[in-house]
Amino acid sequence: MPELPDVEVFRRRLSARGLRKKIRQVAVSDARILDEVTAATLARRLKGRQFTATRRRGKHLLARLDKGGWLTLHFGMTGALHYYEDPDDAPPYTCVRLDLVNGAHLSYTSKRKIGRIGMADDAKDFIAEENLGPDALDRAFDLPAFKAALAGTTRSIKAALMDQALLAGIGNIFSDEILFQARIDPETSVADLGAAKVKRLYRTMRHVLKTAIERGAGSEQFVERVPKGWLLPQRRKDGRCPRGHGPLKISTIGGRTAYSCARCQR
DNA sequence: TTAAGTGTTGCTCT
DNA sequence: AAGAGCAACACTTA
Image 1 (cartoon, rainbow, N blue to C red):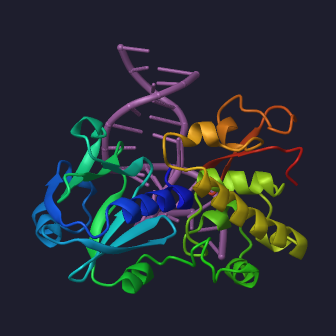
Image 2: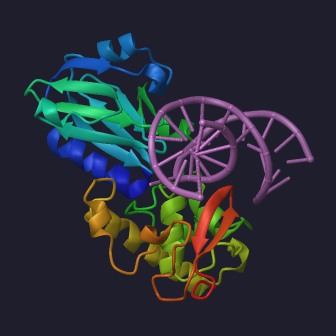
């Protein structure tokens, strides 16, 4: 689930509630999501420290520590970041819990344990090591930059949108939504996309991602706040085109299950 | 009851 | 270059 909009919602949550509060205790209840760091080392690096800034690149969230270094978080398929004050609100599937000095808690949860938490000395180096392209919502990622990211590839547009090295942040769900809203067939080769379609795709991409953030992607309320006419709730067997064109087409593109409407996406 | 399927990435093989 | 297949995991659906 967690793609760019979801992770941005997590980032804002961390930024609004978790900054400049000393970390009193670190509890690792499932070390399987730790990436090249032991529970003991993670605790030692975080304990007594506080977060001073947050960053996001694609689906990766980074939190800077006051004495240097960054905590890096990736949410895999089922991860989330929660903030809560009442212990009764502790979420299930917690892998790492940070106890803040004000009595509140930050909790990294992961149902399927695919996701990871690590430490990095430098954000730029981390992004380079992860081979991440420009963030799909970065201010500097304008239409010419989008064209440059897609230049030279002949793959399907859906596979290209999901390639984190070309542009970072879009996964299976949002590539389907963006292509549906832009009315472009996900199997179209990037080489066959005309300038008009690329421009429409770019604008649609930015709009869909921003809208999802505004509506609280990644939070429980998002289900009820999905805009009318979106494909997302129909991404299931027996799902139907929101524009009334009947059953959706289900195919495999780039190794992932793709949902599209053969009638309005071409 | 059992098996297949699933929003993530990364690897090997073709 | 790009796609297929697989692996990691644990839960849901058929």
